[in-house]
Image (cartoon, rainbow, N blue to C red; front, side):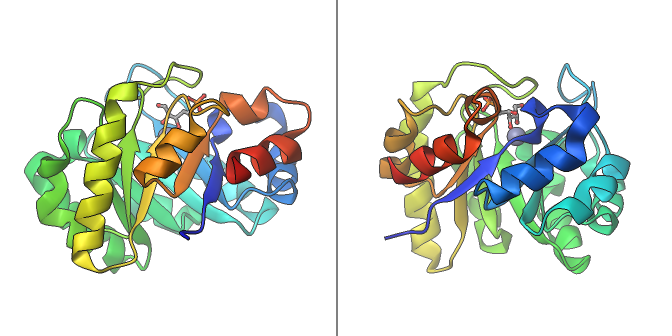
Length: 218
Ligand code: DX5
Ligand code: ZN
């Protein structure tokens, strides 16, 4: 059985109390902290940058997973590495034919790397870079906002991506991001995802340890 990792998205946390929120969600069982970086250009929303990540880094020993939803990500990967990201993921849609070199540049900084694709981007677009990835991230909503509805059309893509990963013989994580709830988490796990991002589903609950446990065990 593949180990399931639960990755709360900090986008849905209380930013005024970010350090405490991150400390508490780690105690509540988060394996990974999913950090959504938005620039108002690649997506129609602005969240936070490397300074925020650097300042909350001391509050948790969990894996810091920086999901860059920004244009020209190669200009900023060093700042995110220095801020304490353990893994940096970049969008195929932002990198185009610079995806491979961007992934390799992240690795050169001593940080794990991953490719991300939007719901309407086929898995075959990242086939040529899968061997360089520590993780593949499939979006199950169009990026930009927390609290959107899961797009079920991505389920066959999860299965396809898991096959692609298995064909490499490497231990590459498959992360799913967007609209994950208690109702659909079983479906995404069965399809082959093992890193489960959840923002609103976790942070809207009073008992976050319980919802993290449920998302892990369902
Ligand atoms: C969307 C972000 C997601 C989002 C997830 O652009 O990449 O990580 O915060 O939030 P929920 O789980 O509420 O869909
Ligand atoms: Zn995300």
